[in-house]
Length: 246
Image (cartoon, rainbow, N blue to C red; front, side):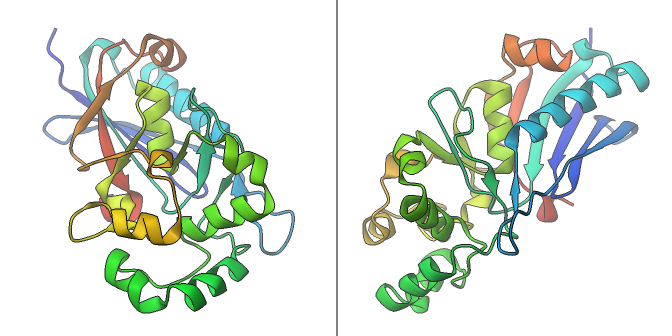
């Protein structure tokens, strides 16, 4: 049987959008599943990463059942997502803490320390970004300062789309388009900066290997196939940031 269907997944801030296309660009179906942004205080903005995964599974099942998508015809899956979600996971890829979103403002004091100790010019020269609590490194520092047990237990830090890629494939990855959300990502070399990692005192082992957005980084595992209704072995693409993909 010919494999001629592509599935695209977008982990958005307000919900997961999933679509199926033929290779000539015809839309077979689109579905959306909403989830919440949790705000216990004015500065907090978190999501349960399991809500992302549950939405992905439900959406793909709906595409199969409602749009007639034949799982055996799916040739590849791509995943994009909102930027700067900071998610510590264990060796099995399971969350140790809710994902701190781009809307989260708790790391204000960590940003001030970066500004005083390292400086805005250096951060801009490496990552192309200003100093702001929205980005990943200040939130990693916040976890280190306020929830040290979580930080010490972390195997990797993932973003929204890389978490879903891990659930689909078992592989820990970071696409280059989302790397800019870390102050230790060199936008010229498109990889982690050893110098910046040393300056920020971040262990490189906490960050996944970097891949270009169009790279096949793994295949759908049997466990993920059972959860989604697809068949094992489908190639999964590294993906990227949702606003650019749109």
